Length: 109
Image 1 (cartoon, rainbow, N blue to C red):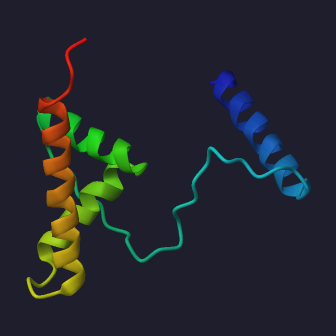
Image 2 (cartoon, helix red, strand yellow):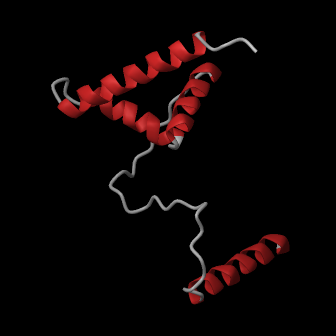
């Protein structure tokens, strides 16, 4: 139990030091996501292949996987006549066609 107390104390000291040093450089590897209206969590089960596809799709766009999954869900829920949804769907379909065409026509090495 002493190890946990030591760890908590060390983290408390580090947090106090970070608060006191407002001139330190902002970390670029940390993304703050609090402050939005989304507070509910949905768990979705995928098989390995589905998760790999979703992860690759997110990586191609430089987005977190959860953001891409949320975008897909929101697109599915948007009205069919919503112009933004139509353009998003066209863009997604074109991206899929491009990816398929490039993967089937890749030169053999």
